[in-house]
Amino acid sequence: MINKNSTAIAAGFIVMGLLIGYPGVMVQKASAALSLDVTQKATLLAVQFWGCAGGIFVGMLISEIIGKKRFLHIGALLIALGFGIGIAANSYLLLLISFLIAGAGLGFYESGFNAMCLDYVTIAYPATKAQSTSLFHFFFGLGAIISPILIEAITMAVPLWNGVFIFFLPVPLICSILLFRTDNFAAALPETAKAALNPRTFLTVALFLLASALYVGAETTVYGWLPIYWDSLESASTSIRPGFAVSLFWITFSLGRLAGGPVVSKLGDGRYVITVSAAAILLSIVWALFGMNLFALLVYIALAGLLLACIFPTLLVSFDRALPGMSGTVSGLFLFFGTLSAAIFPSVSGAVFKKGGMALLPLFWCGVLAVFLAVCGGAFLSAKQRRGA
Image (cartoon, rainbow, N blue to C red; front, side, top):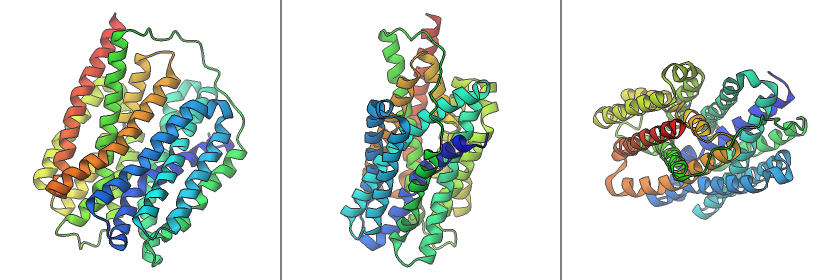
């Protein structure tokens, strides 16, 4: 499986993971230097995803027209530009612009590399398409694991908090070099009857897209606010740095994606999502009651990563099954609504935490998961009724 094509795609997913993993820790690092308040922190956590949503939307419109490789090269330049502005960021506004532009590049990468991945595994590994796709998504988790660890290591070695951007800037450019070597392959997909568009179809679509938005909101609430939550604890003087705690979440998240496939196959899509969502709600309640102990908090973080790991890809596959013959539309809409949620949720949660304090994080997470569970139940029921109709 290791060749010039798979290497470039894996590198793209690692860069996406780096970009997803760095905002929470970077906001925590910038907080003291730029005197950021809770509202500004929430805006910084959200703005990258606003840029990303815009990039994904543009990708839905033009990536096939100009070609995926050219589209991804533009994304790499946007990411590098965002990092370049970050190097000079001596104010909240400049850091905001940095996050926004890098986020737009991330959106280009999300749209382009996910499509390229599907094309590649369809041609090269048609018999193990799902397994091969999951393996590429593991590299996304790998990038998210590495990101906060690198930030902690760099800020310990370099006196400037934004010195991190100097080291991150060449990464997307290296990815572009790898892209130049890839083949110009295109998926030769079999013809499939498209789903009939009727009121029940629109209900199914709406429920799955709402589920996507709520799931991403739940996920970003954990990894986005975790460093700031960590600093709010009375025992924050611990030798364990907040970036390492975020990496723990991504480690178990990535391991969960590698190991969760057989469990999903055994339980089925709907039963799996409902079961792990209910378990996550229980975890959030226990976290709210007993989470102030740092050792216990590490356990909760690790379990949260394991429980959330396979929900998003399982929902995406279920959505695709519900609307056969519309895979491009399905993946584009799913990513767009998920990213839009990631842009909105930090502002919503930030307003809650500003009023009630960071101690509300596990209870807020619990509430989002409870609504998510109800919506998922409706989505799977609607999809089942459509198949039976």
